[in-house]
Image (cartoon, rainbow, N blue to C red; front, side, top):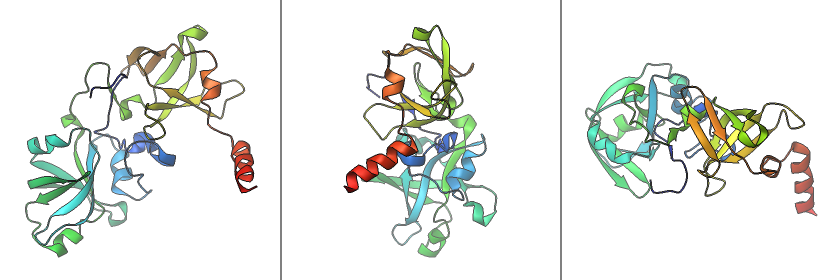
Amino acid sequence: MEIPRPAIAREDEQESRSAAGLRNGGRTPAPSPSSGSAASRAGATPHWLLVAQLIRPHGRRGELIADILTDFPDRFQQRPRLFLIPPERLKTAPREVRLENFWFLRSRIVLKFAGIDSINEAEGLRGFGVAIPASERAPAEEGSAYISDLIGCRVTDANQGGAIIGEIVDVDRQSSNTDLLVVRRESGSNSQREALIPFVRDFLLRLDTIGKIVEMKLPEGLLEINAPMTDEEKSRATEAEQN
């Protein structure tokens, strides 16, 4: 991606959020999964990475329309073997399927699996996740990171002598044009609170997802400015709007 910031690849997220959980409150770039969804189920294990979420049948020959959960949708061409992750309520195991065909439909994708040849058969897959083994994930480019790899990393600030700011618990890709690291504060008056830190090259000194460290050089006052509102602040804002 030609963007002036460290790239965040999405082919796992779901990072699932889970790696996030990670999609609550407008965070993360894909539909937020419910607690019993295929996304949350796949996110609970490191073995699967979601690349799509089946929505409903499309057409009469077993095709299904799906949300795209990967930054690399063209790689469906290279992945005839996929796995279907069932909703947790079904309590069944993932199953391997062969991708016969696919095409893009606006911002979504239509998938045709071998052996699924009717509307009724496709209807039985509504809500399933489409996944690949984690071992087949496309490698992130240098200076880039998957959300699931960022989750759990500690953020340090060189402007505070390398002090640990907190732990990354999410990535917000919807609130602004800049990806925001959602960091649970380590200590101080803002403990129990989160900070939103722009994931931009100007702030980033070192990214070590293996050692779980993200070294940054943060402008003075940024943590206070970007701190999410407290419940009390949200309540006051709501009252002001109502008045």
